[in-house]
Image (cartoon, rainbow, N blue to C red; front, side):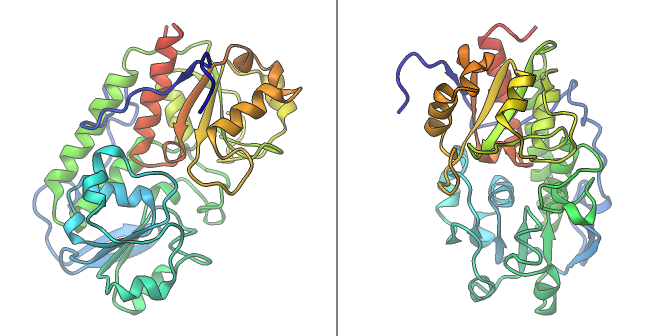
Length: 348
């Protein structure tokens, strides 16, 4: 536990809704054909990350290979049609805990291809190309050869070149909430629960508006630290953290790089001296600086980082690792950052 007196801010995450808004720049998200509304007509074909995915009937034995995809399916009320989940970075979102308990966890990290096949899946979804792709559990083609359709989140391929899919590489276009809404609606169409998908997107939009609608963080600068104390991974301009920063009208001090998670020096962070630090409290323990307490201990003892304005003012905004990934949890990140700026009277 952290000692008393440290002003950590983590906005309360409501378990009901979700959001975007009149102020949400993605409020006019486009929608792909049959995923929009009404009952799904099968067979359903969707263009997904450069491939055509065809589903002959609503899946009844789905496996989701990443937490982001899992939380969408659980939010759509599909636990009874899931036979496995895998690759978790954080505890499941609190409002989804009961439903998540109904679904077997195949592995905390990547399961083997054989373990997935043992569940006899009729559909596989994933958030990252490093999970559903070369070097991961298996490729889409391997599943397809066995008659199992698979779906990769558009957040990991739309606006990225082929060499950057799940490699923390460059984005050719900034990520927007539109990609998350697209994923929700396409998965809802695949499972023939389009109305639930539309309702969930509306909830996300409302949460976005409630969190960020009246926040004007002009003059506020942020740096997002994911992990690693030696050469820290920080957020570049254009991933999930970009959505969070733009929603509150602030500036990411590393918005001059399109790399999603560049590694930088602490001296470069000091040179840019952000108003506040957004710190990922990661459940994993594989790299120095994963846990929140280790991050703060380092920041307040290192001779370079303790000179940061944010450290001297103890302006730390605590988020989960999942909040920094493109997913429904991006809205959680908006809520936490907006809540901190309000508490510090930096919201305009």
